[in-house]
Amino acid sequence: MSDKIEVATAAASGANATAHFTSDKSPYDAVKETPKERVSLLATEVLSAIHDTIRKHHVTYDEYIALKAWLIEVGEDGEWPLFLDVWVEHVVEEVNTSHRQGSKGAIEGPYYVPNAPERATDGVGTIPMRDDEGGTPLVWTGTVTAVDGTPLEDAKVELWHADDDGFYSQFAPGLPEWNLRGTFSVGAGGAFEIHTVQPAPYQIPTDGSCGRLIAAAGWHAWRPAHLHVKVSAPGYELLTAQLYFPGDPHNDDDIAQAVKPELLLDPRPQPDGSATVDYSFVLDPVA
Ligand code: MBD
Ligand code: FE
Image (tube, rainbow, N blue to C red; front, side):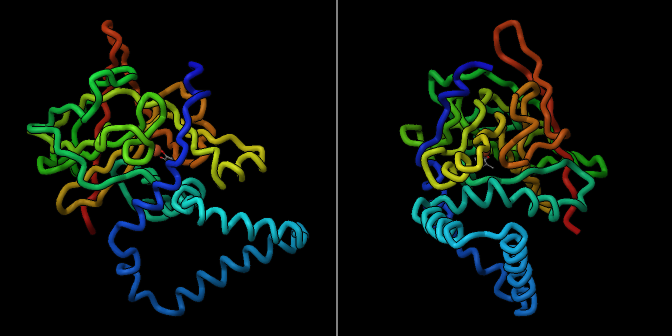
């Protein structure tokens, strides 16, 4: 692909994710009734998995001390949201959506911001963007229906994604507050038509502790280009998903392991240089 992939970066985005997370409502409220037995079970099993790894690979004192220093730095860098969402969230998503019959989901990641501006009446609208926003213009049409086929006319599609340089507004500096973040209420028949631009592949920040782990382990830092969505309707399970573009070199080795075949788009290039794409959502009713 283009050499733009080589220069896209997101310095400081990881740290800003901590600022956003900690300003959110209390994350403990929803688990305050969790029994002690369950807390003990989960903590014990996580610790024994660590103990097993130490025994199996004879972890040295030098390695243990380096680990301690690195864990402290992840917190100082504000990169715990980045670390967890890249390397852990995909399994949480998997076990919590496996019952669904409707659309496949994917992880939320660290860069969602609620209450993005409403941009659609009757389902048709353009995401907030700069006058000279880069990237292939994308016209995305689809519908939101229930698993039984009912059109969900009170559904909303929240869309957020990186720009053509791989940057997210409110996490990378210098972007308008709500750039490439919008909420679209669907129209008749649950239909929508969203105008946006194609995002660039995303490299997780290489200048913090997550980047240092990646470098020390000889991994790469790339996620394929992706659109993030939350699709909601009263009485239906919230669908959080990501959509990907065919041909991206990282669709097969996403560092966040969040690509599924069902989430690949099929954009059709148009004579004017834009692309159109059809992708619809099917929601599961709340049990
Ligand atoms: C992203 O843009 C993202 O979606 C995830 C899951 C992790 C890091 C950056
Ligand atoms: Fe993302």
